[in-house]
Image (cartoon, rainbow over all chains, first blue to last red; front, side, top):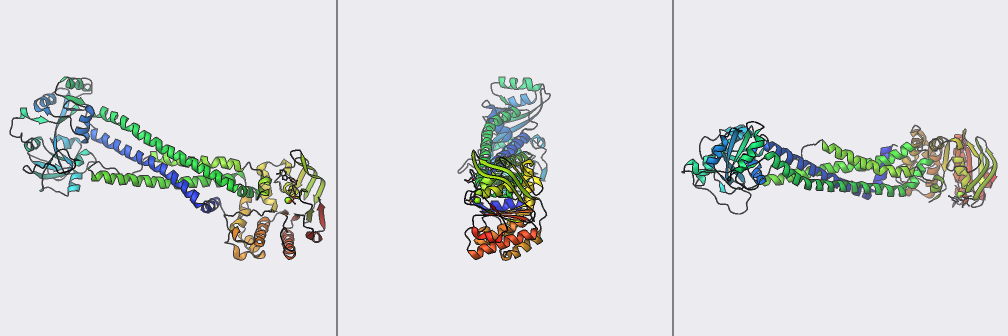
Length: 395
Length: 208
Ligand SMILES: Nc1ncnc2c1ncn2[C@@H]1O[C@H](COP(=O)(O)OP(=O)(O)OP(=O)(O)O)[C@@H](O)[C@H]1O
Ligand SMILES: [Mg+2]
C-alpha cells in the first residue's frame, strides 16, 4: 500500500468526476498553449523578416500597409513610386543600401517580386539549385514555392495578375512566361514564399518594358541607413516629398503587435480564466470527494494516519489530476497549433509549427500543478479538523 | 494497562459518562455492559484516544493520553490500539487485501504480508483478498474489520457491539474469534455491548 495506489483507487472509484476535471483543466491549458505558440512564432517570423530593414519607402497611404506589403508581403501596396524619385533617394548620403521592389503579379498565390540580387543576399539566401536571374523573364523560386509547385530550374511559369489570395479565375499573363533558372535554399523568412525576378521583368509583363526608365515605376524601396543618425532625419525628408512615404518596419510591426497583442492578451486571459475555473472545479470536486470521504479519512486517522499521509493523499490526488490535465492540455495545444500550421500552409501563409517547446510552457505546467495543489490543501486542512468520534459514529 | 480515573464526560453541559475508577490489566478480557445511551461507545472512544476526556484522565498502553498532541495520539493509536467499530468502516474503494494493508501502512509499520495472509486464512477470507467490501457478507465484513484491528498486534483491542444483529451461533462464533485473536496478541480486550448473551463468556464485566 502506498499513497499513489490509494489516490488511484479513489480516482478510479469516481471516474466521471475525475475525467471531467481533467478535461476542463486541459482545455484551459490548451487555449493558453495555442496562443503562446502562435503569437511567439508570428513575432519571431516578423522579427526575422524585418531584420536589417531600417525604412520602407513607397507611395502615400498608410505606413503600416506599406510595411506589411513590402516587408511581410501580406497586404496590397498603397501604390507605386516613380523610378527617378527612387533613384534620387537611393543616392542620398544617409542611405547605405536601397533594394527596389516591384510587385503586381503572383504565381499560384505566391508573389512575384521584381528586385535586385541584394534582396536574396539581405536574407542570406543561398541557391539550392540553378542560378540567380541574369536578365528579364528569368525567375528564381523561394524554397516553399518550389516545394509546393514541385518545379525545378528549366520549368516555365506564367504569372497571374494580382498579388494572389484572390478567389476565382485570375487574369493570366500567358503571353509573358518566366523561365525558372534557380531555386533558393530554405531561409525561414518571407523570401521562401516569393518568386524573385528582375525589376525589368515586371515592367515587361505590364507592357511598359519598352519605355525609358524615367517613366517606369517601382512599388517600394527597402532602405538601410548609412548611420543611426539617419533615423532622425530621413523619414521626415521622405515624407516631405509629395510622392513618397516612409514606414519603419520596427515601429509599424511593434504597433501592429500592440493592436493584435491586445487581442492575444484577451484570449490568453480567457485561457487563464478557463484554467482557474478548472482549478476551482478540481477544488470543488476534491471538497465534495472529501464530504463523501470524511468517513474514510476519519478511518485513516483511526488507524493511525499522520497529518503527512492525510495531506499527502489529497495533495497527490489534486496534483495527479492537474498533471493529467496539463499533459493532455499541452498535447492538445501543440496538436491544434500544428493543425493550424497545416491550414495556413495550404493558404501560402508562413509556417506555424506545433513541434517546439517554449520556456513559458514550464510556467503553464507550474501554474496548473499549483492549482491542483491549492485545490487539495483546503480539504486536507478540513480533513484534519474533523471530530473523529463523531464522524465514526455516523453511518 | 488501561486505567480511567475520575472521568466526567460531557457533551455541552450534559454528563454522558461518569466513572470514578476503572482498571484493566494486560491480557484481561472485559465486557462493558449497559443500556443504550449509557456511555459504552463513549468509554471505548476515550480508551482509544478518539475522544478527549473533558474531565479526568486516561492512561493506556504506557501513555497518559491527555498529554499527547493530536499527531502523537494518532501515531500512538495506530501502533497500540486495534478497533472494531460498530459500523465496521471498511474503505469501499479498496480491496479486502488493501484494507488489511492499510493498518500497518498508516501506522508507519512494515507491511507484514505474511501476517496478512495468515489472518485472512484464519478468518476465512483467503479467497476474498481481491474483493471489495461491498461484495462481502456481513459476517465476512465483520471478520475483515477484526483482521484489520489485530493486524498490528495491538496491546488494546476494542470492539463496539460486535454481536448486534447476529443469531446465537454467529454471536458465539464472533466472540470466539475476538477472544482468540486478543489472546494471540496478548491484548487487553474490551467488548462493549448491551447483548446479555455475551455475559457468560467474560469473567470481567463493567456495568455502566
Ligand atoms: N457527538 C455527540 N454529541 C452529543 N451527545 C452525544 C454524542 N455522542 C454521544 N452522545 C450522547 O452520549 C450518551 C452516550 O452515548 P454512547 O454512544 O456512548 O452510548 P452507548 O452506550 O454506546 O449507546 P448504544 O448502546 O446505543 O450504542 C448518549 O446519551 C448520547 O446521546
Ligand atoms: Mg454505542
